Amino acid sequence: MKQIKLSYLLIAIAFVTVLASCHKDKIIPKTDTPTATRAGLYVLNQGVFQSNNSTLTYYDYTTKQLTADFFSSANGGSKLGDTGNDIEIYGSKMYIIVNNSDRVDVVNAKTGKVIKQNSLHQCRSVAFYKGNAFITSYDGNVAVMDTTSLTINKYITVGRNPEQLVVSNDKLYVANSGGLSFGNPDKTVSVIDLTSLTETKKIPVTADPVSLAADGYGNVYVISLGDFASIKAGITIIDNKTDIVKSQLAPALGYNIPIVAQGDFVYYVTADNKIAVYNAKTQTAAQTNFITDGTVITTPYALAADALTGEIFVTDAKDYASNGTLYAFDKTGKLEYSITVGINPGKIAFVNK
Image (cartoon, rainbow, N blue to C red; front, side):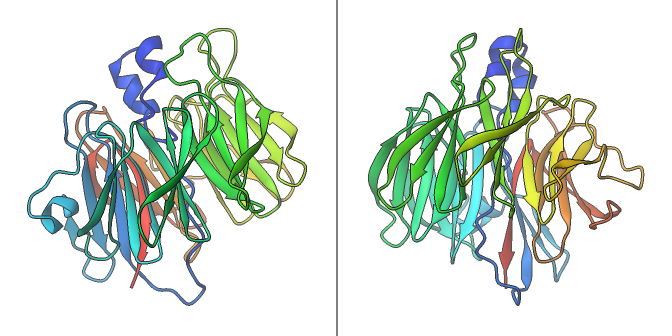
């Protein structure tokens, strides 16, 4: 990923496949209230690696207007940078993780104007808990940023090349991928106590864990890429009370690896570019393809679920070099609308009125 996922595929296969593994599709902090009304959505487009062409697309739900490069428009023509990896809204601020520019941009969630930019080497993903932003860095740590002062106050050492992270049961789970150590991937998920801000455990999982999601039934889902040789990709399910692996799934996964949990269901991308559905309540496979109306996604690249509407959003990176598409589906898997976004659309965030 997720979710860049700079990575593995660069060494294993080719440049285009690297981009497919570069985002890590995400983990939205539950800051919405049942009475909230959406103003629109943002799509963070990674662009092409080392081309400095990441962009932020904004779609206004009321006017149906699209702003292709919202960040640049809001900030006097300034570019977002190289390889936007993650985007999340917490309170009135939006946090944009720009991986290859080594930068965390904190902006006003409604206007897009920069409030502060922090340097953080090879930053990857962000999650939130009680006034802190937790940001993974390929240096092998999680940076703890105060969301009021916007200063980084602490670094928590985890495993090699940490990728996505998710909060569940008042704990932070971090996927330690091993990153560019091809042939020697990490095989752990770090557990961080959110009171003491210390790592308490490393949970063994399938090699090269990269994407995480948490459901409402006490489960944390971990997608691992394997080693592209003897170890196959798979999904590990962790009990968030005991921090013990309760089961492992071996679906045929694609190189694009977003995963998202919403209500009773978990959604992920398969090797044949379908959106599979897993029932979190019964812990059984539910659907081989969520999309029920025949809509074809060439290269599924990001997933997001809107807790307020039940909608599921899927982006299509197509050929990794031209503008992608965002598709909005209702809860039954029928297409509502689609919009053109930027190159390699890797993350989605919803903004309230």
